[in-house]
Length: 446
Image 1: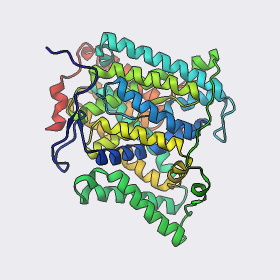
Image 2: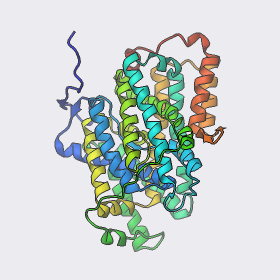
Image 3: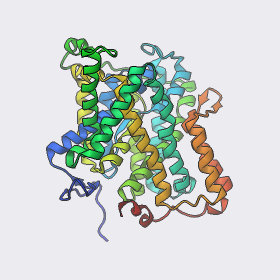
Image 4: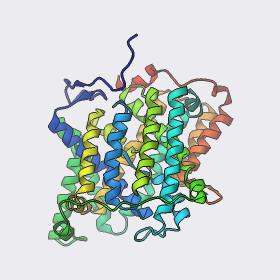
């Protein structure tokens, strides 16, 4: 058998965009790929900017690093895993505990947090090397479809309360979030071809125009201010920061690697279910790439990184899985990070519009978890499966969090460990079974 090369063998897409998905190893014309890449950059923008703000990091630097990290991820995985690397929310609790950050302004103890994030990235990268050498069987035994489906669901559900709260501060924002959902939904249902594939980007533009008319022209809501765009420079480099290594910070932040592994495994399973292709052979590469990029990011002042569920939601909606698109998304993010003026333009997008888009994307993520159960024919007449899913979903949605010393697992982390432990306890007779074969996951494409 011919030995597989490091990089995927890409070929031009020759199908009908209205009816045929674009495979991971296919590519679209340059213009379409650029626009689709921009859509992925827009999808991750809200969360990637919000995460550093909540930890006192520089959003512009984070944006630049996520673009570089996404391209590195593409190279390390050989273009075989469609994913965007964005700033991870899993670090927020640990960073706050280490630095004492209150959530307002810059983080004066940022260097100490950077040292801990570097350690976390190193641990994560080492796990990736082990998986590359030993395979994924041991991880998949710990995280079978009943567990990964539950984890994927809670990733979407856990973020829902924050999203809804963000658009509930006043009546106008609440209605504008609904208008945004309707704009995106209308594009998804009532259009065809490439326009339908760009449902998030076009939906955001339409809702932005509606917001401008209602708020700036008619005065119903908080107007969009364009002064920051005029005052911003066209080109500028963000400020870099150096790490400081503290044993306490390392002990508190390094364990976040466990959460990232579980979270990203859920993402990979969701992608496998959507595409009908088993990407588990490249899981070690992906873990290593994510860990390496997290380490490199923290070395210059950036946040920890992770594969992004928002972009999985985009793929679920568009059925375009081409990994080439993520290279353009990375380039677009780099431009955002290097252009204060362009970043100022994007930052004028109202919270209500970003919140409405998040409702759609997080909902699609949640449904992707259910599809993992369906594709693997999970039997919920079995009490073990039913309890694993039920407890995990309620814990994750309710943000049930356990504190281990100064380390806060967070709702997703606690629910993840609960799912793993409950599955080992309640489904003991199934622990020795391996994951379903690829044919089972391919049902999604039939």
